[in-house]
Length: 329
Image (cartoon, rainbow, N blue to C red; front, side, top):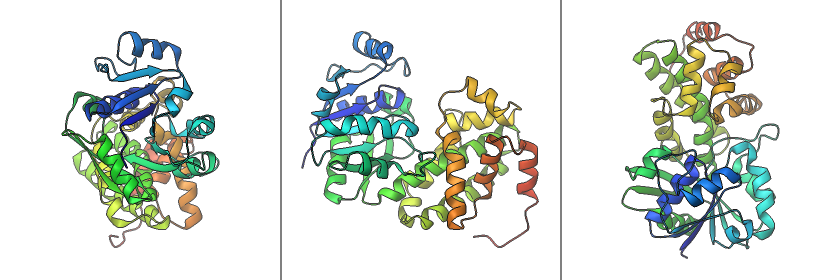
């Protein structure tokens, strides 16, 4: 099983970076972009409005024709998590049976509490759901800086073939069959990164950041276990690896969102001026799902309460610091 032709759905920063990575791996690439102005920019100037300076090579064909895109034997879905259902539903009639639809968004659908792989399975039942997740920034991948990620599909041969198709000397996918674990890590770490940004914005120090990452990882692990994730996936690239990266730098949109909150902006003020923060959508969903399973996630709950306007940053910090002392675990 080989995938010589890769279709990429979405010409934003991450979609463009993945298209460049696939072309670098020697694949024929078709990049579909729905936004007319960005599609024109990609076709004429060979770069995305959302990733300036990263040129796409001649091996990448830019199209707004969904039928042409669907002819690719494997598709990377690089659209926001909350738009995934609409996009997959639109593509489903044109996708051949057995085509891997690789979700490259990190989130859980609001309202339905659906994981991304479940949306693919429901809306495109002939396709094969897969997940690409891990510690990766679009600018790094586009520049060819060393990056390692997790690529998960329920069938090991499919996962390995996809990893082989996308892998190169600087972009290394490790394949897995733990689809649920790969997507849980990506979704939960975004929420925790907002918390890390708040800590940085409040200038609470490196020790506080280390504590938040460590206790946040305990939350991620408890949630993952409750929903069937494997321990090795949660401690791997798509879990711990992505959490460390996203909680460490303003290059992360979720960290930057939290940093602005820590500096005193309200959630509405940050939303008005910020780029897309998947964690802001995922936080209340993650907490609702955790409560339904009896999973304790105090950091995530505090972030959700701040975003919902029911708790101030100061009160949230005080509440976390005055929790009863307990054994670590």
